[in-house]
Length: 181
Ligand code: FES
Ligand code: FES
Image 1 (tube, rainbow, N blue to C red):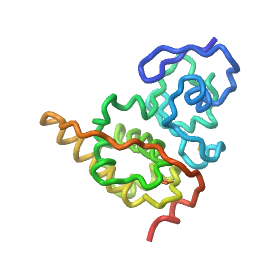
Image 2: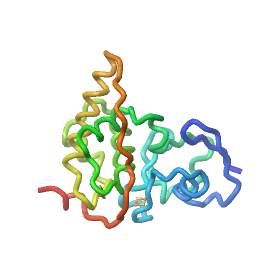
Image 3: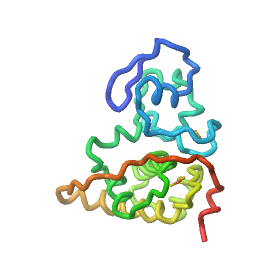
Image 4: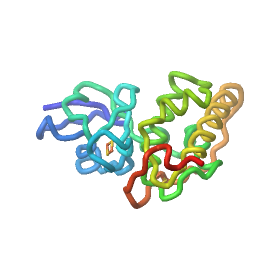
């Protein structure tokens, strides 16, 4: 039996310990935010946090999360007010949306360790998150915006706009640079 915490709730898994974490989250816990893209750790659509670090849940076995904390996009906030979600909404980042939960989870992990990243920091941290719709420039701008919001929220009460759902259809992938002009 594997015990783990998912979005703050204690869970247990009695099945195959080699089951990909993504399968467990989506099929057993009904957390559908993380998406299946490549299944090989190459696209980032399935990104979640394992003890605060971004991991590809398609290629991470549930056993790797034993006694650990897993956070999915559903666990960022209950009302879409996480600064990264707010920034994504304000800059209208998603196109089809399929990659966006993974993009947001990688962005959150970056900002947790680097509250004011520059463009190069962002491009390096987000390099493994592919977007067939080419939203890379908006992703980068939204990360800068989220950094500003986080700094601002530290000194004044947060507003509470609703966040757009980070979901959608379509899973074809282009190289990261394919979306840049
Ligand atoms: S589905 Fe996990 S990295 Fe592509
Ligand atoms: S918005 Fe990224 S794949 Fe469509």
